[in-house]
Length: 232
Ligand SMILES: [Mg+2]
Image (cartoon, rainbow, N blue to C red; front, side, top):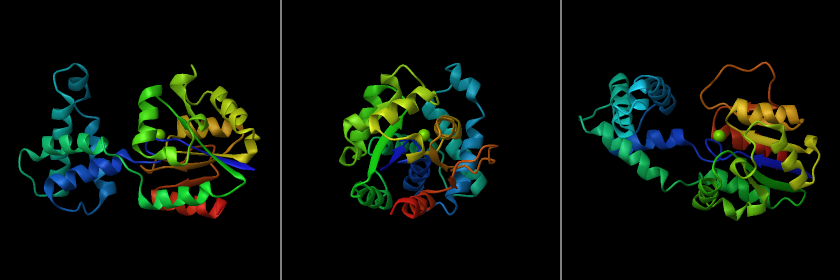
């Protein structure tokens, strides 16, 4: 018997995809290099933080500005309002999040394997994260009891207690469990110290850490291939 434990945010759905899609919807064009778009958008996100934190700039304004700066650098055609309109489109997309078809297909296949248990370990406030489970339709594969939300436990990732709680829940040895997550510090470091296997989704191409996960991937496509290789 083995187990796979998934993180949710930027693991089972991507904020990054939604940021790009919001620009595409607003501009009515396809962004040719989404990774480069995200790289620039995140770089711009470091600027004006002080203004945001002091309340001089609203989130809508700053996101609008980040979009405009990114359009400029990438030479995308835009009108002055297309920054804040993309920021609005992003908020709207967030309220209709869905899993990709490929991931849905993979979870269908994994859930049919008899000697495999699927679970979720996610950080955040209980109600918010459990709503997200419902919104994403994850309840199709994960029963409420197979989900640990850190806000319900008094621990935060990557506290080893969370990983031990999950082992007890699944009745599995550490070496039979795989953690799948996008945050090296929160998901992968914790899993490695607990003696679990791990797949790190390094979406932003961060430098490889000293202690490596079993598998490192850089996209959903690669993640799906890796999980199919190990489990199907
Ligand atoms: Mg995450």
